[in-house]
Image (cartoon, rainbow, N blue to C red):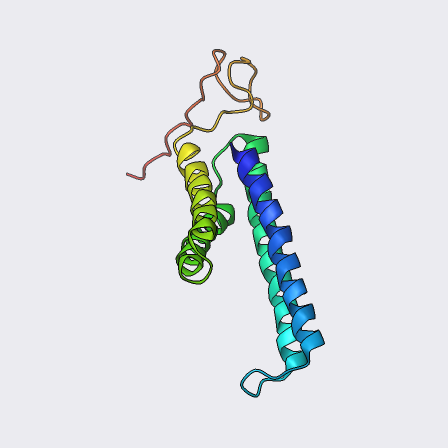
Length: 159
């Protein structure tokens, strides 16, 4: 399931970057001002915005891909990125309903649901130790013969 989320986010990254680049080209070729704004500045800012959002969604896709490969819950910055991507999709869905219509809204809600499902599905999974059940002692040489950890001796107390 995390692989599907990664694929969707990678496709979305390319789509967002391409859409902004196309819109920048249209603005550049029109050579018209919108409320006194410089058309070159609008074109450049659209290209920069497309690249930034494309990289953002690609990074979120990379986090989802790492979740799929490692089969572990995302932690730290990766978890924050996926949560922020879910919030962005919720806001884009609300805007899409008013500007584009229900089909765009449904696309945003589907991606939002996939991201939330990814976060919730992998949330409670325990981490599997690398040497579980092997019976081998840890690298330091310490450890019980049955694989149980050895507790260190108590520190001496002052009288």
